[in-house]
Image (cartoon, rainbow over all chains, first blue to last red; front, side, top):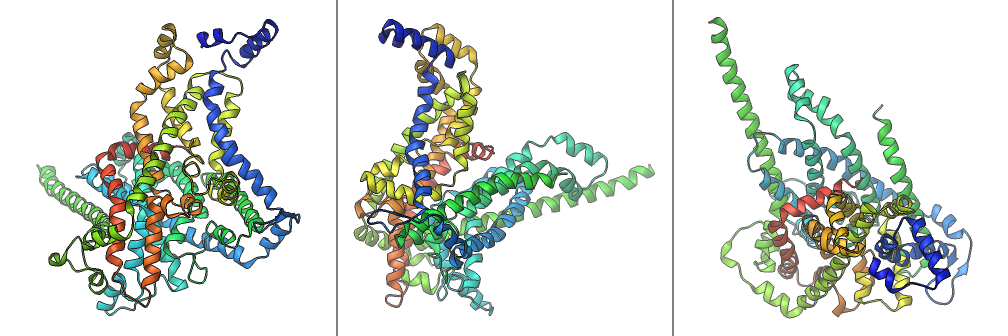
Amino acid sequence: MKALDAQRIPPAATAAAFFRARRWVGGSFAPYTFILPFFVVFAAFGLYPLLYTFRLSLTYWHGSGSPRFIGLSNYSFLLTDSLFWQSIGNSAFLWLLIVPVQTVFSVLIAVILSAKTLRLRWLFRTAFLTPYVVPLVAVAQIWLIFFDGTDGAVNTILHMAHLPTAGWLTDPTWAKPTMALMVLWKNCGFSILIMLAALQSIPEALYEAAALDGAGAVRLFWRITVPMLRRTISFFVIIATLGVLQMFAEPYVLTQGGPYNSTTTAGYHLLDYINNADFGTGAANSFLLMLLVIAIALLLPWLLRMGEE
Amino acid sequence: MVANVSRVPTKRRTAARLAIGDLARHLALLLVALAFLYPLFWVTISSFKPGDDIATSPLSLDLGNLSLDNYSSLLSAVPMGVGFKNTAIVVIGKGLLTMFFCPLAGFAFAKFHFRGRKVLFTLVLGTMMLPPIVFMIPLLLEMGTLGWVNSYQALILPGSIGAFGIFWMRQQISEVPDDLLDAGRMDGCSPFGLFWRIVLPVLRPALAALAILTFIDVYNDFVWPVVIINSNDMQTLQVMLSAVTTQINNAQIGTTGQSAWGEILAACALATLPLLVLFVILQRHFIQGVLAGSVKG
């Protein structure tokens, strides 16, 4: 830094100001230049689009000509639009199908995985995590073939067992659970790993003390494991909730939002506006979605903490 | 004596119960592991089977009719190589930006005292709350204005220096001893020299985990590429895969039956293979990365 400064010593007056400013910020401008790239990229591809979304959301614009200012009309339209509410409702329904199941399942598997006498732990851990690395498009393709209405493996097996078959991806009743199953299959390895790490950080002494008092395995689980996992579980519920709200790729590759919009999630609904070149309404929907996500990100930790007392 | 007699059977009974519990645990995990791995095994096997067989007897394991036909007909119809090339360019571009600028910013936040450090760091973390999906529409329009639709810049730059990477690298760099940096300063290192000659080499394990996580993220990224790319020779592997499957899935309805399933599965297997190999070889680093990702809250 010294060498660098020596090269560009400014004229006396400016030099004094330069050194004063440098002392004021803490002795060196270097840390600012180190963090600058992040802020440049964020300004260009984060902040600017954000402000642009807001401005666009107050206009009527279909891609050509200049946007016409229409105030809050897009917002009042959306708040009474059945498709908008359906997309939010679909996401809420999928949340119910995914997040509680994934949480409970991951905790249970992690508890079994951390048993002291378990062999081949690394093998199980790797097996559970493998679907997490497989590209979503490939996973969706497996689902399309397994759950195909006529020739799919699932219906073939059900048929052989003389059980009723279903149009897993073509019947609005079944499309959401089928998609939820795909998400669970792909992502559970990740949540199992999180829970496993949290379990390993619980002091062994707690269990030993409780076991001396004669507590059984079930009691140990409810009295020690669950309370000690509370923070990790809250954290997981929050990121999973935000993930479900933004879910876009899953409906895109599996159902294109169908049948009858039954899998059009809040995130996927945004694609409709792009396809219809209805950018003003789309921007307003984006903005509403962002407010919802931020509200949940701020409220959920508070709600989850309320349960502790 | 009496006590002894009564204790022996109890001990044996406890041991038996433990053994049964152990067995049940292993069985449960084995079943779950099978459920997680079987579909992948199925894809691999089926990608060597004729498409019609996949439809008529999806679960059969007749090894006699396996062939490379699906792969050869897939590769003659679809330029998968182009997809691999584009994905490689984006992975390397985004990877290098992440691997250089995230630790650099993390270094500033971990080891320098400067005015506004707390506020700026909070700002960085705050950007993690913004849902990427809402940027889709304005970013698409921005790229149109810049003339970047169908370009590598559009695939690489947005989201290239992530807040999470900075946060994680800051955690790791905080643990680098100050003595090491002081020694470097005595030797006349500039702040950047400290970063380049001391911090980066010490940080190697964490950088490896960050690299793997970035690789998997970018390789599998799908939402943004699918929106911004509409020319065939700019498609990344995932976009290409999805285009292939949609085309074949739609075309086959009512015409050729499921005879194209073989090609589709071959494409899926090809696109999955590099990641699976990487995952199995580097799984320890990967798990470390996922765990680091999970403590960000």
